[in-house]
Figure 1: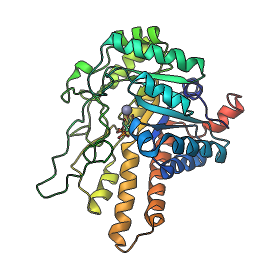
Figure 2 (figure 1 turned 135 degrees about the vertical axis):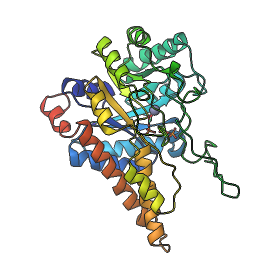
Figure 3 (figure 1 turned 90 degrees about the vertical axis):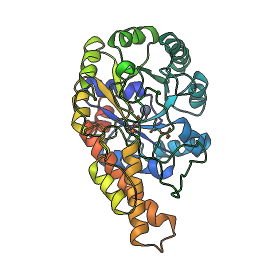
Figure 4 (figure 1 turned 30 degrees about the vertical axis):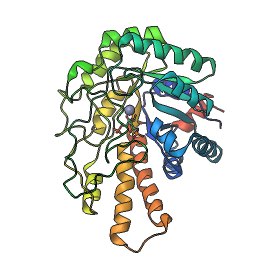
Length: 357
Ligand code: G3H
Ligand code: 13P
Ligand code: ZN
């Protein structure tokens, strides 16, 4: 089956009251993990690539890996989505490389850090919608800004390597930094329901990302989040006003204690931290959340598995010795989310309903 637009999958999810995980990828093993999880749970899937992922893996590799996935799993509807496009040009180049869905994140300016004005956001998002829709590609927009990492880990101690990612000059544990410099828990960047209503009417986006207190990465909350910091009530209010709009939750990794424990057990450093509980996401799904972005949990599963192999077998040097367990560990996380979000079993249902061939 060819790659399908996001709208097709989210319309089915809305009609059948489930959510769909959108999992980030940077390489073949991550794509394989997601596709195997989708096969085992019979789930439609959203595979997404950030700008950093596209630059790391290169568009041609990514495109052909995704085409391979759709060839190898013809029974699974697969969306290929650009995560956090920072300007129309990024979205247009994604479309050129075969992405079937793009996020124009105009909540931030092109530097992916400075909050953009409402008018700027509407302008760039509209521009992308006009082109994308003419080509059968779906568009996700964002209103309100995700938080800066909730409680950043301490800087490396003196003498401890402060490794920088070669491509992005980021600190380990950070994402590419697609987040507003809001100074942590400042609530002024949360989504304003009035603006959300206007934004959808003015841009005609297929899906709307909303800011409800989450942030990217592992360090979201210092304690298990309450309604004060994770504003699920805001989702409910936005859904009341926009019952026909597919809502998107970013920064939705749960950062499970078990995955933290594996990383620590095998020599990694992770301060105590809390993510978005799966039951809160399930509450969101009852109120219009259809796309749930998860990257950090997959990264943690991979890292824990690789650390375990190296700790238990210091002589290992065949990449397959650690990439296979890493792939399995990510697959297990993705399967668990697919089941919890309710997308499991829906690939067959989409075909039976004639939504896809
Ligand atoms: O947007 C956040 C995702 O986790 C992607 O992270 O930009 O480091 O690839 P990245
Ligand atoms: P996490 O860092 O919580 O996995 O969020 C990923 C995300 O929102 C990608 O856009
Ligand atoms: Zn995101």
